[in-house]
Length: 157
Image (cartoon, rainbow, N blue to C red; front, side, top):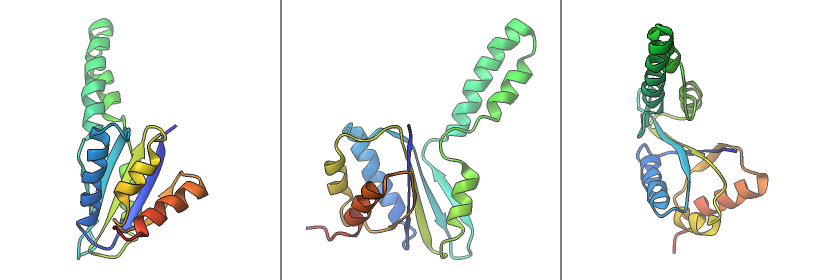
């Protein structure tokens, strides 16, 4: 089961900084990230999503391939390509824009979707210690959410 964590920051660059830390943890096999998106609300209030991996495009190409294959079989490739274009993988874009729009201008939001719980939770919390931010939404238990928020709030030594 996937785990969603959304953290808001008052700084427009902080979410990207933390995303880089998460990518590093993933490269060390400490996290299994399904999707990581940074949303920035500029001074004018406009929200921009920065998706490092365009999962919708992956769905389109995958759907297009299988649509073409089905088209060869059933002589209707357009139907398969269209169904691939409608596939939305990862975190819903509308949800991210809507939530980020509630924050103050000049802020950023980090949306993280984990494939599974991490067995190295203490190491991950240590790496995130002192990065700041406040948890806006999560599917973590209340206990795990509190531990994460404590790590974000803690002073780095």
